[in-house]
Image 1 (cartoon, rainbow, N blue to C red):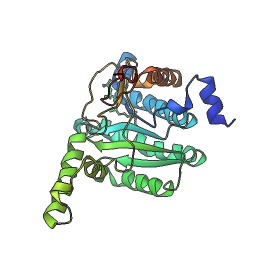
Image 2: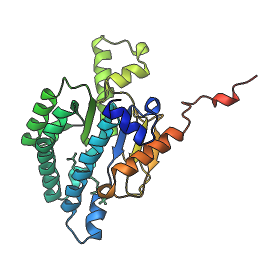
Image 3: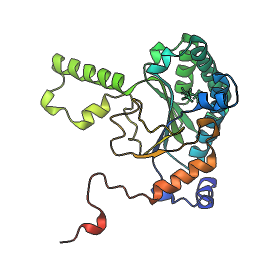
Image 4: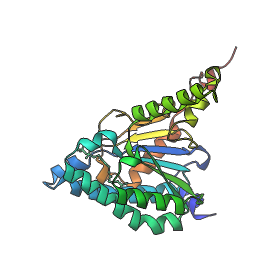
Amino acid sequence: MNSSSSSLVRNELDPDRLPKHVAIIMDGNGRWARKRLMNRINGHEKGVETVRTIVRTARQLNIAALTLYAFSTENWQRPKAEVAGLMLLLTRFLDTERPTLFDNQIRLNTIGQTERLPNGVRQKLESTIAETAGHTGMVLTLALSYGARAEIVDMVRKIATSARQGSLDPEAISAETIADHLYTRGLPDPDLLIRTSGEQRISNFLLWQIAYAELYFTPTLWPDFSKDEFIRILQDYQRRERRFGAVPSASTGP
Ligand code: FPP
């Protein structure tokens, strides 16, 4: 038994019913810091530790794709010092996580308007993405300067341009055409979306892609989110019956 399957047995998870893609809205860093009379950036620092734990756990469990909402288009409106602090944490994260990405065959990916990120961060992201491009263990996608409506606007522009140029017949546009023009092209849709900190909102995250995702809201603030809670949520996911709009299997009689 390899280490991944033994860890599944230990955690009472059925390897055949794991979500292929888990997406997480990491929320509550600021409140975690405020409760301790700390600076918001201390909350983000602690949040990065949780990111490390959850990336490792997802990989250990053999989850194929993990997508983390790290910075939204709306986050640009935060105080300059907080934005700069988050960019610094992201740069440091790319340095410190490098060995983990290599040792665990994790491929780094980003979604969002990354051209808006400061040069230094963007270059580090680009080089890490290029260096890990051949990794096949798990794809870790960081949503950075990401907003789903902006993604949809970009998608419509690309499709409209192709239609105008005559390379795409408007009648031939399908759900697949749309998926192929989103930033998430090539990724499976998330099966499970988790949001921490008690807010029950989607906040402009992956609006098209979560059409059939199971949603899980936990009151835990992101810096307090743990491997154990992640596993409990996966167990809960495995108890749910996913129907994708069809009738339950037991009710399909005459
Ligand atoms: C929400 O907390 C969290 C964020 C805006 C960003 C999440 C960022 C990290 C976990 C750190 C950087 C990430 C990586 C991948 C290195 P909030 O500030 O909105 O919390 P609040 O709602 O309690 O104020």
